[in-house]
Image 1 (cartoon, rainbow, N blue to C red):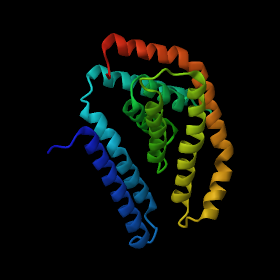
Image 2 (image 1 turned 90 degrees about the horizontal axis):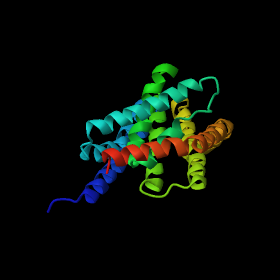
Image 3 (image 1 turned 180 degrees about the vertical axis):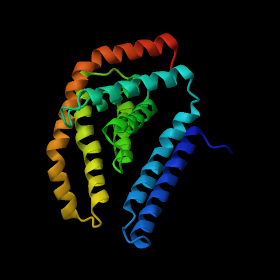
Image 4 (image 1 turned 90 degrees about the vertical axis):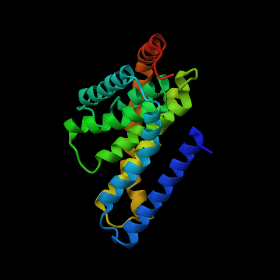
Length: 233
C-alpha cells in the first residue's frame, strides 16, 4: 500500500533523526571530536532534506521560483544596506513575511538562500550553513504559525522577536562553540550563551522593528500577487 504524503514526511523526518544521531556517534567515538566542521555540515544538510523534499514535491511554477528569488534578493539587499548596524538586520523579518504570505517551505527556502547569497558579500565560512539553517528554521516555523491565517501584528512581532532570540540565537551560539572548541560542556555552553545574549537581543529587537514597519506594505502586496496569479496554493 503506497504511503501518503504525511507518512512520507514522517518517514523522512525519522530517517533524518536517526542519521543525525549516527553522525554524532561517529564524530564522538571514531573521530574523537576532531571533525566537528564536517559533522556540522552533514547534520545541517540532513536537517534540510525534509524541507527541500516537501518543497520539490510541489513542482513549483517558474513564476513562484522567480518570486522567491526576488524575496531572497530583498533580504540580501536589506542585510547589505544595514552593514553598518551589526546584528540589526531585516533578513529574518523578510523571511517570516514570505512564509506568512506563501507557506512554511517558501520561508525555509528563502531563509537558506538568503544566508548563502548574502555571505558572498559578508564572507563565507563554516558559519554559513549554520546561518542558512537558522534563517530557514525561523521562516519555516513562521509559516506553520501564520500561513493561511489572519496575521495580527502583536503575535507576528512577538514570534519574530523570540524566534530570533531563541531559535537563531541559540543555534548560532552553539555553532560557535562547536566550531571553535573541541570540548563541549555545560559550563562552556552557558558562557557562550551569556556572551552572545546582547547580540541576539539586538538582532531580535531589529527583527521586531522591521516586522512592524514591513508587515502592512510587504504582506499585502505578496498576498495580492498570490491571489492574482494563483501561486503556491
